[in-house]
Length: 160
Image (cartoon, rainbow, N blue to C red):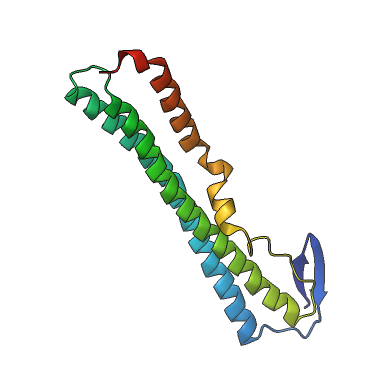
């Protein structure tokens, strides 16, 4: 029985006498573990966004109660600091997610090279920090910061 390998949507068949070597098993096990770790970082990123919203609402409610239900600059400062802190945390998780994806492609390319298959380009090799900072999955932090700045501008005359 021949072994089929998917290469960019095309099936390539290895010879009938193909049997997985220990190096092949190790490569696929490593890729599987990296994939699971990447999935965990992805789940953590979603959880960070949920916690950010929860902390934002709780903190603004508490501050609002401490300032006698009047608008105070502390509300707006907290409204800026909280999303910035969580944005930094989320950037960090995305950076590690991106690094793990790059390592997965490296491992896959080892297998590909071993059997003469075409090597995949690895876009995760460079500009990881740039991609982790400017990522559309972080739109919620930008929205919170913009909303806070708009409200600060609107209510600047009534702040105590």
